[in-house]
Image (tube, rainbow, N blue to C red; front, side, top):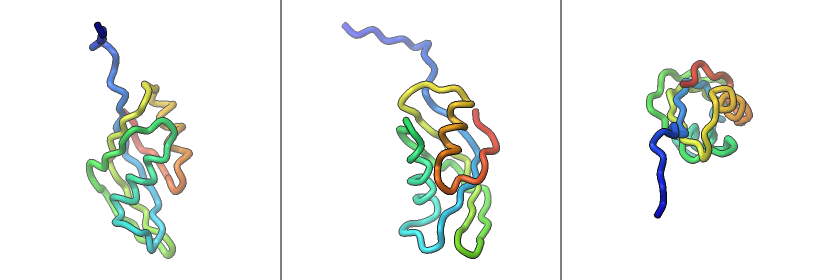
Length: 97
């Protein structure tokens, strides 16, 4: 019989990030942002909860989004931040909870 422990925290985090999406991307901004953010190590799923801003540039569009991340392991906020910082095009992480 399997034993489960409900005291384990859910391996999720929420954050507000700014990410660059190159002009001419194959999909829409939200889908491309989800795909890029899901490249972080140990990520299970990324959900864009809200788009907070769009800043068109010459070769890319910077978007500010509120996201929910589900990880394959439980991590501290510092570990989540460090993993997200490795995502290509990520410009800033405002808040992680």
